[in-house]
Length: 189
Image (cartoon, rainbow, N blue to C red; front, side):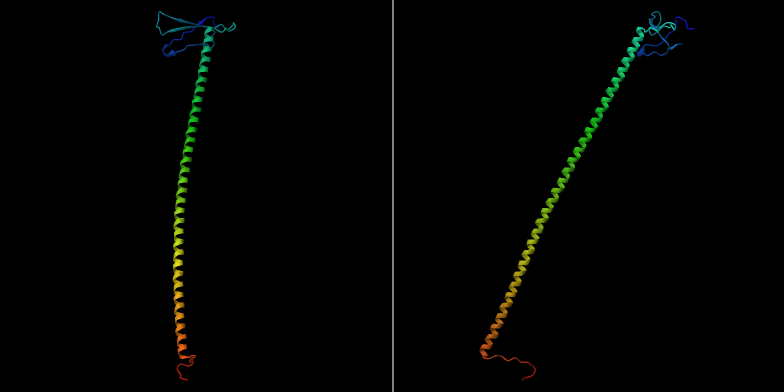
């Protein structure tokens, strides 16, 4: 069914190691032989693939090379993924550090603001206390002054009453008798 030797050509440009066109009738491959044809373009490569379906498949050096390339590509991909992961972890740590720093700065500024308000309140309270103490002392002084004035008035009234008493007593001494009280002042009795 399968021919013993089948030749397939793969034409492509070697720029950037990309093959533009691949022609293949069977996905199975056993032996690969790379030939560079010098009589045609330098960019043309001929690959000869030998298919032997009846024989046990043998691993060729090119297959080992492809497996090595695949392993290297896988390792490279894993290394890139690991590097990306480490980079993202570093970014997350940096963002977390920035946020923690921002929280710390907010805490410090808020504490300072509250402490400033507390000091201002304490100063206002102290000022109000001083004003209230002065007000109370002034009120006490006014009360004392008012009391002194009342005492002076009471003392003056007492002295006036003493003078009236002494005048009345002097009048009685001079008349040598007790003054009669008139019950009915409008009638002479």
